[in-house]
Length: 434
Ligand code: ADP
Ligand code: ZN
Image (cartoon, rainbow, N blue to C red; front, side, top):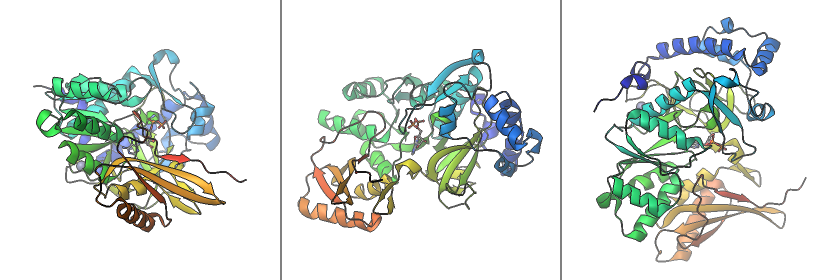
């Protein structure tokens, strides 16, 4: 079967570091010229005395102002557009996990480039036109729906736009249509498997599943391995956000050694969230992204609030696009308990090392006698021989990781609320003393 590989930009996929940087400088200058059409950036650049010609190297991106989620909210809905509205053909809005929604506009060219980026990611992990791709993520404003839809079609696969939810129907599609690949949030994949078990369906024998794209929410390496073993598939981490289009920003290659961020689309920086200065490779900081091939709404130095680190700039797969570690979480996800900083993913990492536990858990924070307390509720995958001893051991391991002693509660499978979109992992019921 033939695929128009032009869409995948094979010439861009394996550029050398020098070629990537030369392209980035050229595209950044063009982006800055284009941004002058947006009153927001025009004012900022003029105030700071910035001219596109001042950009001579990729490092010069640091001369530019940051853009924040608050800027998107302040200019809601169309104030950051760099083209007249009549040139735009679609808008998407973030799912609003952490506040008011924000709007991103797209021209037809933007949508085409976005589909190309997603197709490139899917091709990279081995998907081909003869695959059957089921997209089990929400459609509508959530970019995981249409983003993957257009990318998978561009690659030429038969697509099943199943959307999220109705798990029995999802499984029927998987078996009836011979689905070979699924995109879903990791927490929903485990739900699909639970229902398969109830139905007596063995994914290895009764389905053709071979590749999964999992993303849109933080998850641990342990969670990925669970999913792979559970379904007998390869699961690849997919990273995106509506401000940067949606999925297609970064994806793992077959090496599964970090997320390749496409540097012909974005300039990637990792900065210290306090000082906003760059951090050395290997150190955790906030991911900052600049779009360099977007038409309707370029964003300069967008502070994503996602925390990660640079793993490398080369890869055995032959691609030199920068590799970043899986997201540790967003700075907003960080829980501060009795002065200790904790990310939900640290807890997940420990829980999933216990094979008796399922992947569904909930962290509840409360104030008792003026003290912060944490309760970790987790569903059992199988009945342990001694649940008291198991709870004790989990508590001990969690304490080693987070330096606090949580209350651990083991629950029967299916007891905790199950979300069809991004999983809600933390309930903060603490009293705030001001
Ligand atoms: P919202 O910001 O309302 O959740 P988005 O759908 O745009 O809306 O979500 C983007 C965010 O989702 C990212 O900034 C990041 O925090 C999270 N995210 C997306 N993909 C991943 C991934 N593979 N791993 C961890 N977090 C992810
Ligand atoms: Zn690679």
